[in-house]
Image 1 (cartoon, rainbow, N blue to C red):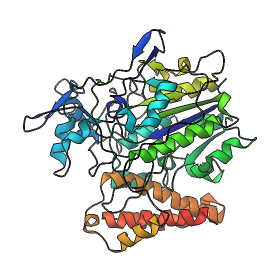
Image 2 (image 1 turned 90 degrees about the vertical axis):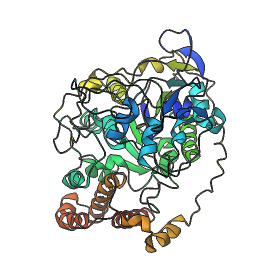
Image 3 (image 1 turned 135 degrees about the vertical axis):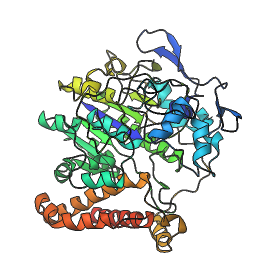
Image 4 (image 1 turned 45 degrees about the vertical axis):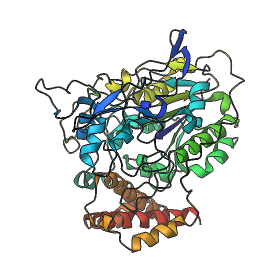
Length: 508
C-alpha cells in the first residue's frame, strides 16, 4: 500500500534528449507484452533557415553556454515550423511537425549552436536515470501540460491549471501577484490535502522554490511544512514521519554572471552541469530506498518542460481545465487544449515491476490524479479529472526484493565542481557589475523575483511570528523595491540579498 508519494520535478529536458538513445527494452505496463521505448532512430532531422538539414546525434553536452528558447512563441515554431502562427486560420493550434527546434535556436541567438538541441545523451553519460528507468517504470508518452515554459507547466503539477498563464511571467503580471501569489479557482493539491487532513510537505533545494509563488504558501511555510533538502534523510527516517505527499524542489543555481546562468544548482537546467542533477536523483532515490518508508513509498521523477531540446513524438491534444482564465495571465489567447513537448518521467516503487514501459499518454496532472485517487479527493479541474493515473505502475501483489540499494555514480563531466566559497566569489562578480547585467530584466528572472518577494515576507513574518503584521509592515517597502527593479543587475542584487538573508536565518 502506498502511504508516501514523493515527486521530484527537474528542469528543461525532453525525452529524446535524455533517453532517446537509451535503447530501453522491457514489458508493456498495460499489455504485458515485450516492448521498447519510443526513442530515436538516428534519422530524425530539422532544417535550418539556410536550408541545411541537421540530424539527431548521440553525445550531448553536459552543459550549454546558451539557454535554448522555450517560451510560447519559441515552442510554437519548434512544434510547427518556421512561420507558424497561433491561432492558425482555423482558429486552432497549427499542425505539428516537430520541425523547428534547430531553426529556433539559430534565429534566437548568434552564439547558440543549433546542433546542440539535436544532440541526445548516450546512456553512459546519464547512468543514474538510465539505471532507474531500467529497474522500474519509464513513461515514454508523458508530455508537458502545455506547449510553453517552466512557470505555467509547474502550475499544472500543483493545480491542474495555470489560471490562464500561457507564457513566462512578465514584470507587470508578477507585480499583481507579489503579495497574494498565484490563485486558482479550485485551489491546489496542497489545499485539497490540507482540507482533508492529509499531511504534506515541500523539500526546498534553495531559497527560491517555485511553489512559494502559489497563494497561501506563506502560511504553510510558517506552519513548518517546508524543510531544506539537506534534512531530507533525517526527516523521512524519523519514526514520526507521516507526510503522504512530498514535493521536492531542486536547487535552481545562481543567477549572476549573465543574469540567468543557473550555475551550481542541481535542477538540470541546460546552463548547468547535468550530472549535478544526476547526483540529486541518486541521493533522493537512495535515501528513500534505504529508509523505513521504502515499502510504502512511490517516487515520481519528471521534468517541467523540454527546455528547447528536440523530441520527435507529436504531442496530442488535451482537455482544457475549464476553470476561469485570468486576462492578466493570458498573453496569447491559448485555449489549453494542446499538450507540450514530451519529457522523461519515471515511476519508482517496490510495487513497480522491473523494466516496465508505459506508453499511456500522461501529462503533469497524472500526478494529481494519482494522489487524488489514493486519498479519495475530488479533481481540481477537468484536466486532472480526465488524466490517466499511475496506479497500474505500482500494482505488484508482493514487494520487490531486488530493487538496488545503491545506484552508479554520475558520469564525470569534466566541469569543475562548485566550492564552498562560491557565494563569496559570486558576490565579488556582482560588485564589479558585469556589462551583461546592464540590460532589462528578462523572463527567466521575473518569476524568481516574485518568489524572492515571498521569501522576504516569510523571513519578516518568522521574525515577528505574525504573517498579517509582516504583510502590513513590509508591503509598501516590497512594492517600492519591486518598482525600482529595472535591470538585470537590480534583479540579481535583490535575489542575492534575499538568498543571503535566507542562508543566515537557516544557520542560526
